[in-house]
Image (cartoon, rainbow, N blue to C red):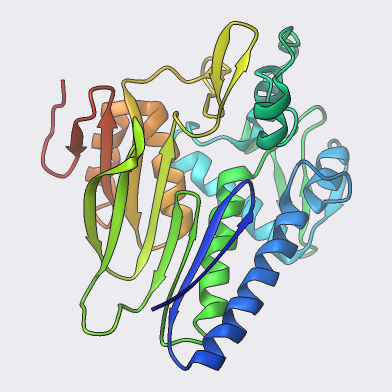
Amino acid sequence: MRAHQFRAMNCEIILMAEGYPTRTLEGFEAAESFIHSNEQRFTRFSERSELTHLNRSAGNWFRASPDLFEIVNQSLHSYKKTHGLFDPSILPDLKRAGYDRTLDEVQRLGADPQPVERFMGRDLTLDMIQLDVASSSILLPADMQIDLGGIAKGWIAEHAARLLSQFAITCAVSAGGDMFLIGTPEGADHWEVELEDPRDPSQNIITLRVGQGAVATSSVMKRVWRQGTASRHHLIDPRSHEPVETDWLCVTVIAPQMQIAETFAKAALIGGVQFASEAISQYPDISILAVDKNGQLIDMQETENVH
């Protein structure tokens, strides 16, 4: 298994592939280029990105690329499936919590200790977004701003893996907690995916055996910073408009598609045991594992009541 590593999307990217050496190297180059170019399209930290142009158009129809239209459409489906726990329209709350620049900048320079007051005007919900399939156009309500962050990263990871699979027999793309796997390593019927201990990233808490598909992890321990005397993280609870307070440090979801894995990892971390239990019963093709503050691993498939 060959590997290629670089940094993008504020995380470490690892590409893995088996096949003819020259072809896998070509695949690594193509996948890396794809990841970098799409990061620039969907980031909120560039004035030239397509997402920035969409946010600036709020209140007016915006003709989107097919890819941006697809990601926004996926976001709307995810919002409905999670009863609003997955909500990209929390961008103003992220900024208010100090995440108004790239994570590297916020962690290096610190966040503004004086958070901006939350806008108390009309309540905006993601399902107010209108889509016109025929013209690939999006209408954000006036005053709405969205951050595609995790779902865009997952979309990029899965599509990069599918691109890499054109050059390799077996391959995988890992992007800071999001992983998409195609095929299985030679001589094996599964992938071994190490789940790190959120309290000590140098230690692994379990090695998962998974087949082709997606693995996504959401954590309150990764994207963290200080805002004045307060510790902040990037997972906003849409119900409180604040970084979520949860008994779980991280949630990992195994699913057939990256959109599903990313959606339910974030929503389960925010919604806790009750949401995770409901998700397992409604979507039998997903697996949910959580790590609590004591470092205990909880497999939601094996328990109905977690105390």
